[in-house]
Length: 320
Length: 264
Image (cartoon, rainbow over all chains, first blue to last red; front, side):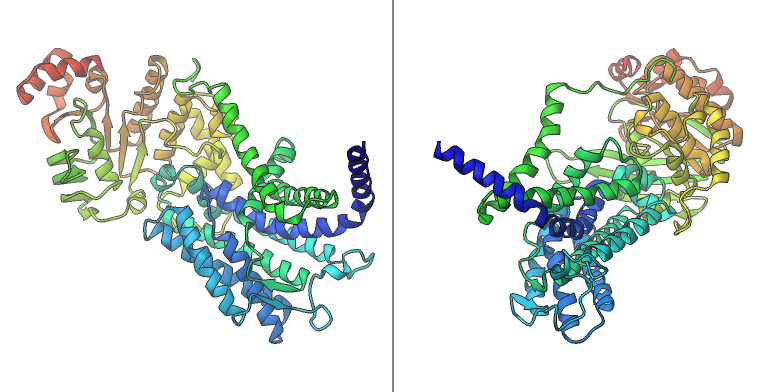
């Protein structure tokens, strides 16, 4: 009986406090969503699993915070963060395409190396603060419940719209189409004269540039860069991609909308996490929970394919 | 003009699995030649095509196209001269992309890919016309994903893509082998139409002796990694399957393999 009471109380508490946390969860979700779009580009478009992400997210945060601490304009700091993130992608790309290292391992190597690099960017400290009172932050957690233009959610949505717009345009160009072909069928791409090695490298650069952008914005949002801020980012990215596909895959067919779906996936992820935390889950178990959920979602399509094997589609259907 | 000079290729050299796939291969194709290639399993037919495409580097020898040495050119750079249709219908197209997107990619084979739009309205009209040649009704399905097409439709589309920009050399690697007989016949007809329309220099591997005799102006037979029979002109026209088998046993010194060839 007491257990039932406890559960009821926890649930009531969570439901009552939940609305308060929604603005924060949504903003955080969109910021992480930009990173998830980067993951989507490699995982779904290029068909490469890139683990650089865990390192390049923190790199973006570190570069942005250190530049702003030394008086740099926040927009310039963002741009520099993106460029350094792209450099990280370039390294992974070169390790993979020019040194013959499998993509997953190449990403792990870069990610590991980035840990040292991030520390040295941050003056060998694991954490560097960026106080909202001292610096002119583009987005800050403090104003997330404000009902005016200082609310970070506005700029966050604008930046997301710009990212989606640019990517939509780019993947419709001759070169963007070639990148999509590289991921869809590398044999076909090479037969059409596409340099798939360069393509994969450029794709990794774009992806990690976005991840670093997300890291830079997140660092501003929470008012600090942390060397561990990217730990598990790839899993959160995958979670966002999968949640987005499951919830909106049937409705959102257009490429731009698919990118929006990924971001919405990240928002849903953060809302759920927020709710679970309000229920009283120990934050230490958060990553275990995330990993379990992602593993399940990745496994379900496989189990489904075992249950009813697909018909072979070679051979034509009469009027072929 | 394509020239293969003394090409050698061994897979897994120095291991128990070492396989000499090409062994002193010499072949010269003249402009407008439509050559059918036959030979038993492991004769080196596909390996020859892949060597021309640059899928792997050859151990020895030279590949010349229009007098230019392309032996060391990477695969994607050679693609500007070559049109390819693979044996596997899944290989030649991007399944998750639309029919028109696949065609637009092929239309830019060998060209700089820029930040201009990947496909223009004028192109769409052109593709609609081109697809009519295939006679499969694909001209009304420009925006359909290629993954929705049947194997035969995909092979026909790949064929069109390979020839959308006129290649110096068209390479067909048993492109009808995975299709049912009716579909295979249709794709072969389309092949004949497209090749003869602009007199493309073509190498077509086939397992079907009758097709090898019917199509093209020249026929070569491979055995043990090189060409053992090379007939053209009147002599080719008068070939029969029996005659071909005779030539084969003469060249290889055995009748056993030839039976397998007919059956497969």
